[in-house]
Image (cartoon, rainbow, N blue to C red):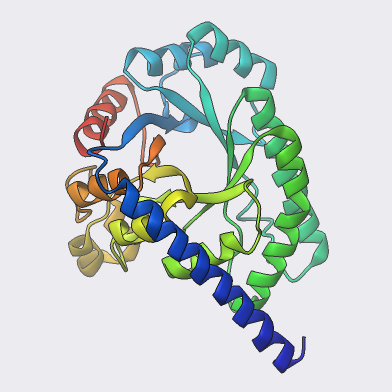
Length: 302
């Protein structure tokens, strides 16, 4: 794209994002009187580390007070068995995580790799429909030495657009997660990236803990507003980061780090969020899962 055309296109994108943000501000103004958000809590299925069958794991989560679970796709689990476990335990599968998005990125320079990533996304959408899930979690792109920011932006949008008709057909939304992928590094840009699709079938899967290293989750929540489809829940300690390195910051229990949970709760209430919050932290046995459920109840609105 020639420089002048790029500038014109970028200007249109920013104008559209500004309009969207102004509209979202109006939504927030109307929602500011809401006293609380309503959250349903879940875990990733892989966090259940007891030696149990699939249905027994589902029943355990139900007993511990979890409202649902999120599955990986593709996985080595039998899909029909997972569906039977869901029905027998009465525990919804609210979402599916695209498990190939890190290795087969939609921003890869190789079109063949991008095609594999797109196929993985479509498989996840198909599994989500079968499970009765409403979203597929997707890491949209990865920026690195061999992938520029601009190329990651363009390539990932091109590939995701190919999957949107499938998402609509299946009635499953694509939820983009903010992760440490050197991409979509501000809430304004994240909002603009989503808005440019001009589709109701895409939104944000907002990871609360991932932001604490370099920002404040409540700021992102206010900016992203109704674009937020679901939440991932983890904690982060800036002190551990400073002493032991950036990834050490995650080695802290929910409610014991630097995430300002009262501010997060208020921000979620301000935007009128009602939906799922899924723990994405080390799991374990029954007692570990019981502790996670209790911690989620303390830090999140119910």
